[in-house]
Image 1 (cartoon, rainbow, N blue to C red):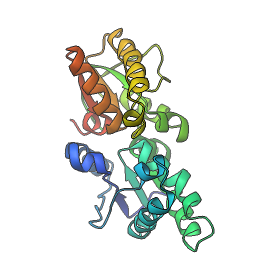
Image 2: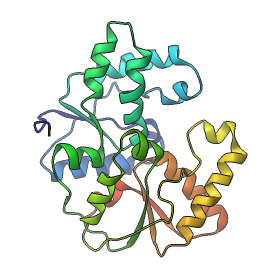
Image 3: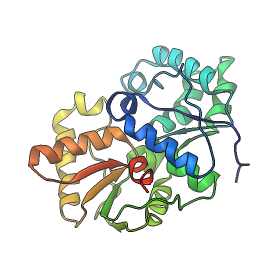
Image 4: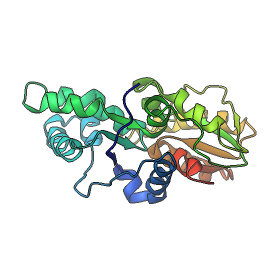
Length: 243
């Protein structure tokens, strides 16, 4: 386990910044509870994931260089997004390969974490003192599950939330169909995947659907709203930030 970091940065992410600043606040509250006061660098921008997904690596590389330069001074970078963290870890060394930035990107990527992964694997903390007396189902995003292999971290911290009952999905590994630009370019396929996921969620007794990625949550919440299903969708940071 790495040494406890002294200087920690919050990578807010685009969707959180534009649609759910409460997720950023929740992340900061959780970090404060475990004794860390995170900085929020003002120069941060998009990680470039949409450009990479749509086939624009050169443009994404410019954002990657800016991102590395912004977060390089920190001992650890924490983000409330498995997909953005996966972008930094998997794709930055590729789009910057062969340049002086490649080594710098790899170094920063190795100390960039999704929130629950940071809590469990870096700090060794599962109980953050949160209370949330509801039945909760967890949707682990594809990047959280497959790229980071950290779905177990999200489950671990949820199990330690006072009053929370974690209920299982029948197919927890199934994608919700969001996939960023995938849902725009292939709407019919995306909608079919969403229907399957919502059937799985609706078959549980959950009162709240939680995920580690806001893109998935927005996609799922839209589908539930169109079906007239009253089920709250919350980010993990919002649950952990409660008391």
